[in-house]
Image (cartoon, rainbow, N blue to C red):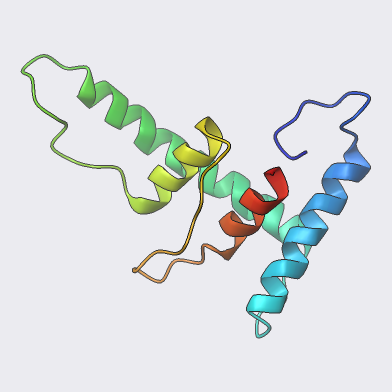
Length: 112
């Protein structure tokens, strides 16, 4: 629903309901900070935007001559964003650095 293009089966109200469901899931897990569907949607696009630059740099470094893997790996957040955008069967269980991944988990559940 969230990744689909608008059309007969994907409408703005459906996307809004999906973001509201995600926010309810996150709020149930973390009741001290109340988030709206709009908050979750904005946070997801900010995460994607930041990860996009890191992913592009990683791809450029990977294609350089000299062989071997890139010296620097993607951050866990960038890798998760990349996996969510590329694959539909990604599961996010959390990051040891304490970054809020509950939104990504809710997004994954919504995409299934």
